[in-house]
Image 1 (cartoon, rainbow over the protein chains, first blue to last red):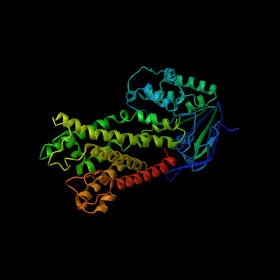
Image 2: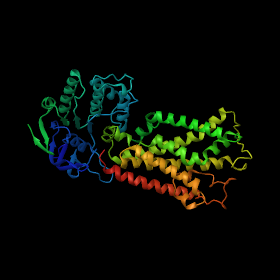
Image 3: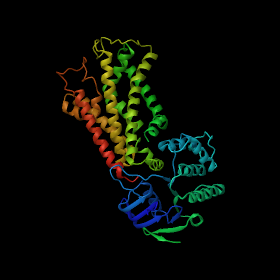
Image 4: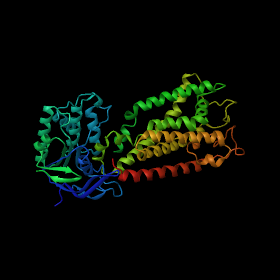
Length: 215
Length: 260
């Protein structure tokens, strides 16, 4: 049976530099897999491979049973929510406007759902201030709201608690539990050991371009 | 994805549109001051402005490039692309939305460059009826519909081609400023070709913005078929279409596989 996320012998170079070599990994539904590693080790590239932002040079990536490859149209996975690196919104719009514009692309959820998701992250949907005035923590919460609002089967988080205060971390923990219970397959990338040990069922270290299971 | 792109046509680039309109107004005022005799109507003012070599081959195209140069690149450089790609089923959906956006911007820009001179002319007290003075480059019998029906499609097609070519170039150069410089140089080259070599038809045919210079293509007092061989509208449209299609193919090849 196909897992939500599967890497088969995946290698990737960025420019001339080899970032990943012979990566094999699968993430099951309802599981949280953590990836740790030093800066520049390729952790974020793993997430970008799942989203289709980059394609593998060798090997195959399957998301939701579908192979992610350029093909004729530049195939992208469906049902993925992601927060990768420093997320950037449309700065001139409010948080609600940003999320509602994104939600309208697929038209899967209503404005009420967008608002309730924002409230879950302790964000005020009626706040008319432009996102460019948001603090780092608020932007991170908005990014998490963006990732979960359409109830995707797969969630990808890159340093998810970056900029969050204690209350924000608590909210994120609650959300993680809910998503696991929903059966989402989740990958978290971090260089904070605490973050990883708190949330993850399995943890891999990215060392010398390959994955090694830590626990 | 298309609705998403079109809904932000103005708001996402608002300051650039405002800048563009501001520069256009200043440009018009300078142009009006430089005229030896006052135009007889808002129509004569508008079309003499739009058919001026420096305006049509250089200033208006470069201004359009400044507004649109990173329409494709902006999502990538701002890292907003991650939110779009997880909601698109294929990268080409996003690319087609961008191409449509560029076309819509060229239509909007053409509407602006035609209407702003009309408004400024009205505010300046010029006659609003269609009157062509005896010293104008246009014949007094030239119908207004002829001027409009040649100007609008030529400008839209050229701006669309220009905007698309150099937006796609920025996917290869990794920074939109390089594309802007290259685009500006191409416009300069077109204008220089007219200034220096306008009697050499072949040089005129293969430049980019020379096709927006309408005076040699329509009956005027300045040019006749005896002393100037300008490409026909059909040739110009065909050439620009070839450039556009080539750019789109190169853009598609890049977008399909590039690291976003």
